[in-house]
Image 1 (spheres, rainbow, N blue to C red):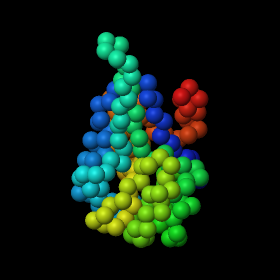
Image 2: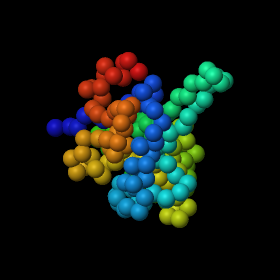
Image 3: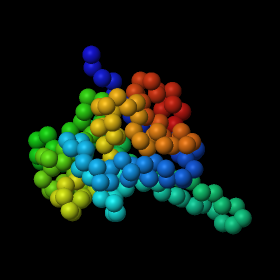
Length: 171
């Protein structure tokens, strides 16, 4: 039986900018070695999911919108095409794009190729790093990554693409 593709869906209309996703990602990855999925994320300088805010208008009519940014695990990932090391950057059967921290040589081609600017370079380890969709937890039976689990407004959704078609069509 083949696994169906999993996807992230972000409803920016209900993100309240709480940064819970960002905090739990740091909690999950800083100081934790999840090889062969990921080496530890640095405690500073990288956010594998980052919430940005956009302020529009002037006082007294101000609107603030928030947007989580993370790897979108592209179907045709430019980072994978840019990687010159066989198997260092690959797409899993469940759709998650992973940088193998053992095979990565630190060439930075994937960092430059990412159109979303969500691949970071860890100088200390000489490897590229990014959101893994908590693949190490998915492999243990988790239904969603920590960022999705921690989202109080359910602005972050993760699931099988076929099951989320209605949500995606409304986005």
